[in-house]
Image (cartoon, rainbow, N blue to C red; front, side, top):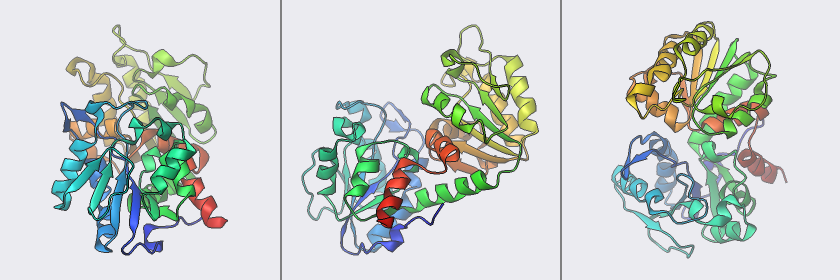
Length: 337
């Protein structure tokens, strides 16, 4: 892949920068459970502020599907950022210009139907708010959404530091992996199954758990192993966990996104804990993808044994399968025009 343009390449001094971040953080009763995704954006935000740029943060949370849902407001994120930056972060839910307010965060982008529809008019409304666009949301860069692929087509654009680091690490894995490469897919998001076919030519083994075995409708080659689920369908069986553990022990590279069961309930954590321990004990190069997986490993006190934690599971696998993402391509194409 060619060298990606960095925020350092943009003349942003005193200008207004639209910063697309990934603040799709886990919440419980309105409180942020894991702040990692917010913390990872701080170097880019501080770089912009040090250069006297006005920052307008764009992000999303959950899947409100074009409707305003107060439980998916970014207010907890704005409050947390205000503390971390020691500057008030103003949260707004309209698309009018915000003059001289310092740091501004637009309310959850997915409250507007135009975001997920990649509506050109919505992209133009966003573009009218600033002078430059910076993508620091690797985890959302596989989406054909207005703030990811529409907006950078309208403004001078580049990438933030966290996004650049993600691409650097995953590029190396994709071009020079330590083999065998073992992919572990879990959780509930069905779109993870869509990448299986794209990864088959590159990986050596794919292990499927979580709710995904219930969603598997096609037959896969031998290198794909689909776990058996327990009677409740909320965890993988002990036998499947043992099969997975044996494969993990022999891996050279491990890529994992999504729990093996309903880990919110203690009685269904067993499969995930066994796989987490096997991954942690492995001598392979280990990469986690997605906030849920990171939160689990943190809970089990195993996160520090992971070599790299990617901010997005879906985006990570899409990048490894394709070597790029729509949100990356649009900025590269614009640069090469």
